[in-house]
Amino acid sequence: MLKLMVRTKLFLELLLVTMIVGSPVWQACNRRDSSLETREFQVSLSDCRITSLKRTPSKVRREVEEMVLFYEEQLNADAAGSQILKINSVADQRPVPVDSGVFEVMQKSVTFARLSGGRYDPSAAPLYKLWRRALSEGKNPSRTEIYDTLGSVNFRRIDMDPDLQQIYLPDSSMQITLEPGLDGYIVDKVADLLQQHNIVDVCISKGVVRRSINGESEFTFEEEVLYEDDDSYGTPIVTLKNLKARALSRFHTSSLLLLNLSTGYPVQNRASYVASIGPEAHAAEILAHIVAAGEISRGIALVEELPFFEVICVTEEYEVFCTSGFEPYLSDLNPKYTLHVNNSR
Image 1 (tube, rainbow, N blue to C red):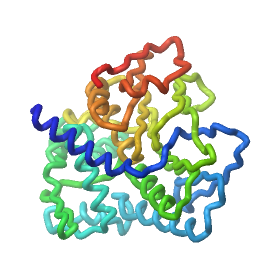
Image 2: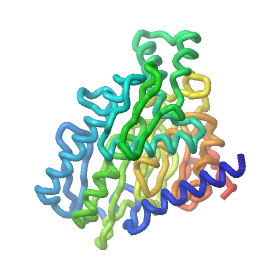
Image 3: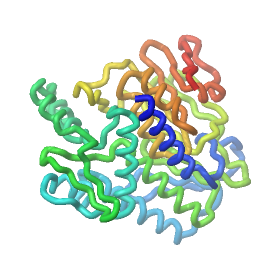
């Protein structure tokens, strides 16, 4: 077990180092200098927004639009024409050749499933569908339905051929989904595209994730306030300041259906708010989900072992848990909350 953990840690370190080399410094998503005039455009038919100091050239805007709409279509398991939908529809029949981006994000998803020991699993789509269908009917699934569906959830059975760039599901009951992580992956791809055009001083936001690219004009985002409710004018919990990362994923757990993939039932860890920061939006989104979807202490300990990423979790019992690297960025903690900092790093 120890040997496996060491091997896994080294693998992830190599993976993340390749992502961070040569990347500009980032800080969170609220402007430090309110005198800076920003421009914003929203990708049509999407919730993806680009905020920048300079006007984004029309050619680049068109490229961003095409990229976002392509990935939203191809990576959404419910979208007609989606490559993910095609993989699911021919499960146990034949492998499906996919585009390089689709194969890449599936590889990353399986990697995080392995690192989390199955707390996150891209093959959990059937279980989530079962619960959503039952809840829409105002009831819970039966124990038999849950256990039968759990038998289809196993990321280790996803067959991926890197040479042919094909993905195959060996069981007709298996299905995959890229939620969570889809929004983060799209944000990362947009950031890569903008950097290829030497466009900096921008913030890309989509869903629960944001990522910023800095230049030399102090277009940084100094602080992020976590509130008890989705209402940003509600009671503040804590302020995150001087975030030296490039991506932020945050959400209230009440806004999501979170399932314990060991039991098949909704998570009961009392977590109410989770936020993760790091150099990649896709990973930050998945890591926040991993912490929210199981035992909090184990999730915190997992992120503690990963270079460049930090996480914070707020519970219904007015406790705040975070990785050791997050502590320097916390300020103005609401006095009714108790802070617990992981000390294993």
